[in-house]
Image (cartoon, rainbow, N blue to C red; front, side):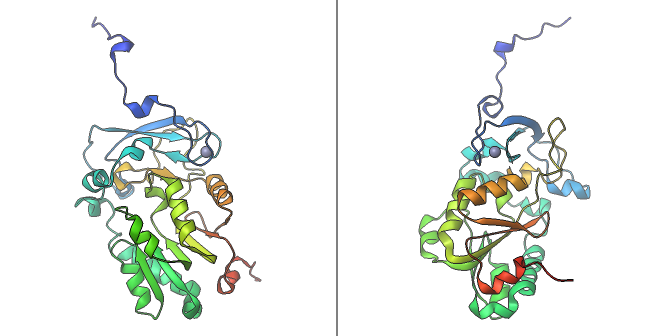
Length: 268
Ligand SMILES: [Zn+2]
């Protein structure tokens, strides 16, 4: 019978052993599960990458149900560029180049096109600017900004906005606090932030394996929000939180007039 190694001789990845406080409510998170680094969102469409052999641990906050992969907090922009947002990224997120930004531009126009002359719009996390350019072509005042790679000066020079869209960003950020402080700094006194992210509610439960397609490190999905965690985050920044559906949400300080119809109960 083979001799098993002593536990003390086994080294565990640091992420699996260290205490990790929840970045939203400060409660100590619990280890939830481990997945292979190559787990990706296209698996939902039967596109599997070969296993990388690299374990990625996800932690869950027992209080606010926020879920995170803590090891990415220590990655540099270069690490993200080399291992996630590299030339293979398009394989596991084929819609990001143009299909999704065009769809999101149409969504914003559908909501607010009539008020476009009153809107100063920022597309935060806008990549190459497809969404913003599509709106500009329709007469919108729109600016694009990508927080990656970090550029504090450019952020400071942007000014302030009364409509900020943040599509496909929240789940990608290694530092939620930084995201919220950036957004707060960009908001006028009356500003609506519309953002997308799928919620962990009903998708990540205690004592179940992390099989949810959205929890995919290869796509850079490393911060996964529950409704409660978003409510709490809004409160900490003196913002209101609302949700259009399970994937599209908003934050605001005071609602501009042109946006108030959104949150007014509609008569049938
Ligand atoms: Zn928490």
